[in-house]
Amino acid sequence: MPELESSFSNVVVTEPQGVVLDNKTPALICKDVGKVYPNGTKALEETDLVLNKGDFLTIVGPSGCGKSTFLRLIAGLLTPTSGTIETPGLPETKGNMGFVFQDAHLLPWRTAQRNVELLLEVVGTPKAERAQIAVETLEKVGLKGFEKAYPRELSGGMRMRVSLARTLVLRPPFFLMDEPFAAVDEMTRHTLNEDFLRLQNSEGFSTIFVTHSVSEAVFLSNRVVVMTCRPGRFMKEVSIPFSRNRSNELRSTPEFAEICGAVSKYLWEGA
Amino acid sequence: MNKIKNILTNFGPPLLLLIVFVAAWWIGILIFDPPAFVVPSPARTVNAAISNSERLQIGLRNTFIESVVGITAAVVLGVLGAVIMSSSKHIERALFPWAVALQTTPSVAIAPLIVLWVGPGIISVMLIAFIVAVFPILANTLMGLASTDRALIDLLRMQGASKSTIFWKIKIPSALPYFFTGLRISAGLGVIGAIVGEMTVGRGGSEAGLGYYVMFSSTQLRTDFLFSTILLSTMLGLSFFFVAYLLSWLALRKWHESALAPAE
Ligand SMILES: Nc1ncnc2c1ncn2[C@@H]1O[C@H](COP(=O)(O)OP(=O)(O)OP(=O)(O)O)[C@@H](O)[C@H]1O
Ligand SMILES: [Mg+2]
Image (tube, rainbow over all chains, first blue to last red; front, side, top):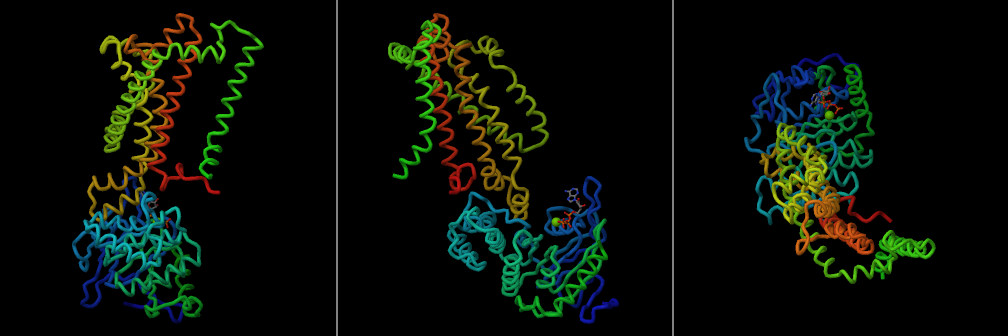
């Protein structure tokens, strides 16, 4: 991969990596994916992307450039109008992907635990097992003791944790996250970031994450992709060199600031 | 202790207003002294109710049954109609205008047709109660089914959920608050429909409902009896509304804003 000239000494910037590397089976291969909505909106064009197992890839880009469209295409909720999307490294079963939205989208008539059981019911897990998995997963996201609480009794950050747990119970090898922590305050977001990173490290799933926050992107990912607008395209990819065991102290290091600066620069160039 | 306080704050003000109203009515009678066939006094009204208690009992029973059947049919067919319409935009576009048309046609105007086809009596009255009560349930439930959170449907679809799973787990509970809004409106309307029905297509004797006695007493200028019938009708309508309200509260109290106690 040829390195592009960069005024940031520590930052590795490449063209978005759209070719299969080594002999690993990638989790996801997108070839020349494009989406034109029925009303004629060109949301996405010529998108190539290869995601390796265990990758944490974050997409940043101006509003309306097609990030959500891209995630929905991968999730199979939309069909591409051109190109192909393959998931060679994932099991063929349903439940191989988890989707987390910007807002918690909980069922207000269910308690936290019953919300977390929802998708287990859909895939047919027996009742006793469901309850046990839900309780364990709630503990994993830091909500032990809130099993019986209704969504209205939880704070925004806690609701997001329930939403996360709802998807985690399926243990999907692949997470799609569309600005999942955008609706909470910065402190809560930092805690959620740290916790989610820890979860990813322990469970080993691959993630495609969308955010408007450059520092969130850099903190979480090993790859950050910058998109341009109209039609949406992948413009640049920035590799994040830090080890996967990160804590919030990382945010105050000069290296972190430098990489954030680079990503911001490309973001503004593309806007 | 708290319960008593609760009841007082809920029922105290309207009860107080009732007392003020009856007092004003009485004082008005004392001052203006109108002929009893124009405005009877509260005492005369109560007396008329007591001396006609047998008729009022029959009337109350018949109106009650007609309302219950009409409203129940409206619930069943209204919900069914909403479910069918929500399953396809085409069906909704074809059916909904007719539902609106049925609603906007004055029931008094179609009463002669109903008499012609079904004959006068209890069944016809039930039919009118049904026609009047079905639309709010249909329209509200339809709205509820249509305003289900898209993201939740996507979430379930991604895990291979069937249409019926999505329907029962997501759509029906989401539509519940809307349905109950419809039911609260329909409960009152159903009683009104039954009484208007009795006035137009009802029969006397053992089939007589409150609406029949409204007609009967007014043509005989027995205004005191008319007053007691009207008051009883109002109470019946109120109790239907209350039951609908109670059902709604029981179903939604755990989670929906409308049923939650206001924050202190
Ligand atoms: N269902 C749809 N029908 C038609 N056009 C759509 C639809 N959904 C999105 N679009 C258009 O496609 C483009 C990309 O939308 P998308 O939601 O993917 O953007 P985004 O990058 O997620 O934006 P944001 O950062 O604001 O969430 C926009 O121009 C949008 O108007
Ligand atoms: Mg979006």
